[in-house]
Image 1 (tube, rainbow, N blue to C red):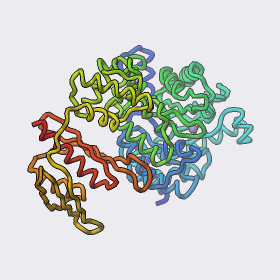
Image 2: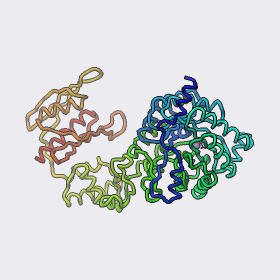
Image 3: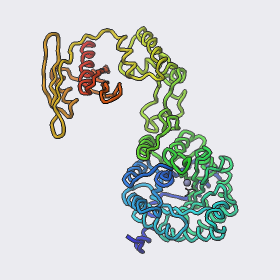
Image 4: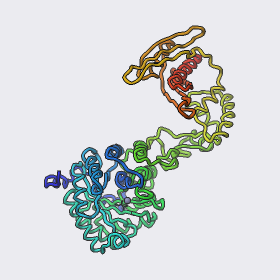
Amino acid sequence: MGLNQTRVDSLNDPGDLPHLKNSDNHKNIKEGNKMPRKIFIFDTTLRDGEQSPGASLDAAEKMEIAKQLAKLKVDAIEAGNPISSQEDFDAVSAIAREVEGPIICALARSVEKDVIQAGKAIEKAQKPMIHVYIGVSPIHMAGQLRKTPDQVMEMAISSVKLAKSICHEVEFSPMDAARAETEFLYEIVQATIEMGATAINIPDTVGYAVPDQFASLVKDIIKNVPAVNDVRLSIHCHDDLGMATSNSLAAVKAGANQIECTINGMGERAGNTPMEEVVMAIKTRKDYFDAYTDINTKEIINTSKLVSRLTGFIVPPNKPIVGRNAFAHSSGVHQDGILKSRETYEIMDPRDVGVQQSELILTSRSGRHALRHRLSELGYQLSDEQVERAYERFLKVADKKKEVFDQDLIAIVEDELPYVPQVYILEHIEINGGTGINPRAVIGLKKGDELFKEEETGDGPVDAAYRAIDKITGVKVELMDYNINAVTKGKDAMGEALIRIKDGDRIIIGHGASTDVIESSAKAYVNAINKMLHGK
Ligand code: KIV
Ligand code: ZN
């Protein structure tokens, strides 16, 4: 559909767009009101994030991320730059059509054809927005654009005016604002607000700013361009000097009420402000920022993993909030503290970002407290004396390996536990299955001198084998957990199955190893049943 008059009218209707003005925030700051300020989260993972060298997403992947961002409850999604390619235009249009909740925004240079194309791409959005930008620093105007400040001003004014004729929500970015002449910056901000911009975004395009200076810039804009109080005041920082998060938060403290950011900090060069960092900083230090976001923080990890998987950008283990080690504790002193009271070494509850629990990494620095805790999580309740013996053996393993894993612990502990008589022994296993064939298992278990055989079908070969075992033992088993791991390398790798079953309040671990993963699964199941029967 083209940009016909009907569409223009409907896009101009603000409808149920969120309250976007900054004036309430400033009023609150000036009057020292205690009401926390709402900070809008504008996500640009699909636009600036996708500009990361080496990252490229197809339309389906972009849609998947956009839907997850809506679940995360971002206020705005910058879905792409529709003039850049037909693929990007189609991806932005599809997101505009299908993703409900956030504002869907399209980027445009201050050029007529870009603005028109952006308008077409977002015309079906529930809450559409066009984001217009132009370089305003001397180096961008003279060096790249080869334009005078007057010409740049003219381009900004006419493109914002055009965007405003297409849709109500228009954001204007004076690109490279952190290196601009401030008087010119004030003038262009004032002029574009007069043309109808509903948001002004102050970019630190090259990551040049430092927090104090960036905060002063935001304060000076608020002071010198009072009209900024009637729109949303946004910032957009890059991380070239590792200060994107600090600069964004300093700007928020100075009065900005929107942060442009990306998941995992993706973006041009060193990337953009990582959303997870600013959102959790605002939440964790509410006492300092006196602000909040609407982000459903419990979706942070899911979103981070999705973006990492689809873009192929691995999240470093020590990355704040979303890194694998962000809630993992390694030193004995820290582990002891965490086990006594989580707050000793954690300022955030991992569950708030969607991580199930903190992790204690067992190394030679870990103490008995951490070992006992992990063993009880694995279902082993040992006496003090058993823990002591297990700890000595644990230290020997830990000295050889950097990290001691559950499999190692189980091997250590099984040796320390009293002998478990093998009530049942797996004698025979036969599996029949394949594409379109209902999996069937024949199991032979020996009990004393007697051999019992049963046959069962199931939802997969492991299920069929477990059902046949249940039929022989007549024991009611509640399977809680099932894991299979390769413990050696190559096509003939040994597969180790580790399962957990429940017997009333007792959790029992079973393990079994074989080059045949179905056999190791059956062995683990029989091992757990033997322990269960022995316990009784
Ligand atoms: O970094 C930048 O200046 C940008 C603009 C398009 C906002 O990405
Ligand atoms: Zn940028």
